[in-house]
Image 1 (cartoon, rainbow, N blue to C red):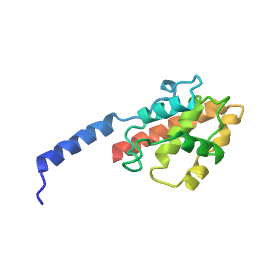
Image 2: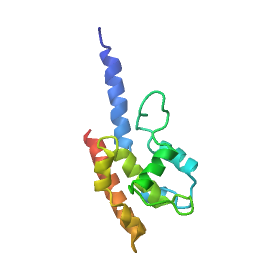
Image 3: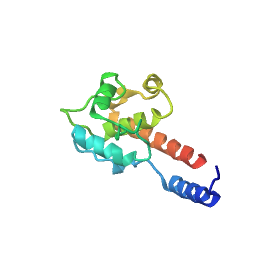
Length: 143
C-alpha cells in the first residue's frame, strides 16, 4: 500500500499550525453567570472540540450524566441552585482534558475540588486553572 507523502505532509503542517494557535479558554473568557446543564455541555463541546468522541456512536465528549458523576465523586464542586459558573466550567475543562490520558481516580487526586468552597475559592481556582492551561499549552507546543 502506497502513501501519498505530499498529502500526509500537508496534513501534518495543518496540524502543526492548529497546535501553534491552540489555547484553552482564558479565565476571563469563560462565562461567570449561571448556566444550566445543557448550556454547559454545549459550551464544553465548543471549548474542547479537539478531543475526539469516545466512540463513533457517542457524539459528545461530555454528557450531563458524566458531569453529575463528577460532582458525586467530588471531582468538582456542586452547582449552585442547578447553575454552573466559571469555577465549575474550569474544573470540567481540567477534568475532561486530564481524563484523556489518566484515569478518574488519578484526576481525583490531582484536582483539589474543595478549593472552590474556601474563602479565596474563585481566586484559588483561577490560579490553578491559569497554571494548568499554561502547562497544557506548553505540552501542545512540544507535541
